[in-house]
View 1 (tube, rainbow, N blue to C red):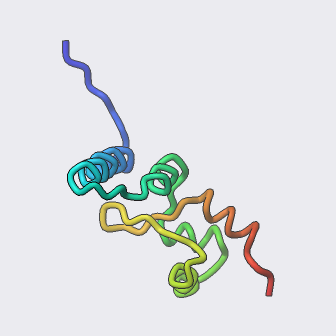
View 2: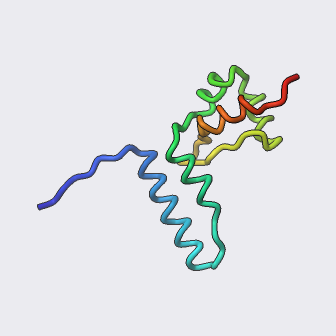
View 3: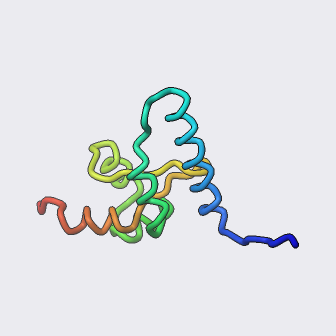
Length: 97
């Protein structure tokens, strides 16, 4: 008997990314940073537009924060996705002006 399993596209992308990361590590002997990737897939992922709305900032400001290393994004399926939990941490720990 065949069973069908339904998963969302971002979940499938995460599973594929984990498999590729594991294969690269196996064949090259170089471990890829899986902790951040796994954490991003387990949390709510936001698009850049959603991240801007969540942080109450413009897109250029979001890009500037990323370039400074203040926030990270995860390139998944030609999109830049942001971990909501990481953005919440940034809001709690960001320096005040």
